[in-house]
Length: 454
Image 1 (cartoon, rainbow, N blue to C red):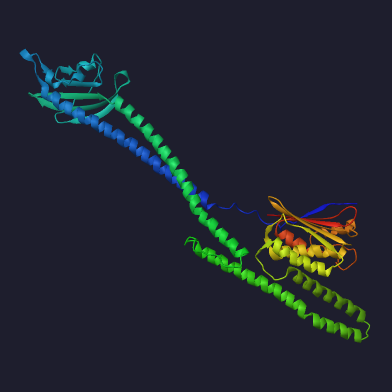
Image 2: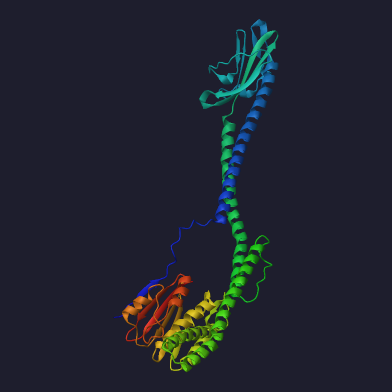
């Protein structure tokens, strides 16, 4: 029965990670708050300042008019009281409800401007030399700014009240404040987008650092760091040193493993010769153990031969890296025709050594158990790489496929028809958060499908 079983490699359980902090978001938030506070405070100060200037201007006019009215105040003819001569009155005090008013109060005396008409206004009296200013609601929804002054003339104590409606200036102030608000909002929006543009422009330097780090991984030559900002250069240098150390350690490890496998062959062959020359009760067991060790050594040497020169940290150039491996496999298995369709895949971002080891291991097993033909196809989509390796062998029992799909389980590769030893492939696929599928394909043979995210 044909079965497609998918094994998704999952990482060990880990505590949920905290959301990553965004420097750009923090800077944007801080700058927006500072901008709003600054612009808001500026708008409040400007609005308050304009109001104070307007009121001080009105008050200065009221004081000027008060001086003119006091100067024009004189006894009326034939001792009929007091009057304000025409020369001391401005024309605005003659028009009814003009917004400019005065009121002179003395002992049994009340002189009012014609503009007050018959409006009844009561104000308290002040002592000589005393003055005060205040605001109040006036006639016809007017807003009055009032100046009062106590003075004495001809031995008579008077209180002069001069009034001006500040509503026109208040309306002008609010109209100005509205336009000022629009200007401030427009400026804030412009500054916000300018801030985003500046952040985007400056964060491009981080993109350049990321490109440099990728160059450290994928290039043999050391990239030029002259364009990296001074503040980020130490970080780039430290990362470069770390990656170089990692490359050296991985390379030494693989070379050491290959050298160990090569050097151990001679002692093993000598042990086999000694075992063949001696005849003991445990000779058969010793021979089995020696065969096992020798098989492991041969396998590691074959893997090292397939991968070729160790170059950790480089991406996979299929056009350059795959043909030498295929040539080696064709020499190892001359009876098997290997068909490779990889032209459309181009360059893969995965590590070169990992991919060659993954492809070499799967292809080696396919050639081992195939009858005459092995097909390799690599497809690169927008977000993943799909690798399919098929052979025309006898296939695998369903139980063996299910065992292979269990993480950490593998079959003995040396048993005829036992299947594929995919433990190494599982580990490589899991390191890239991919998944692997093993299935029998009709009419016969096995197909291994591997998906790796980009």
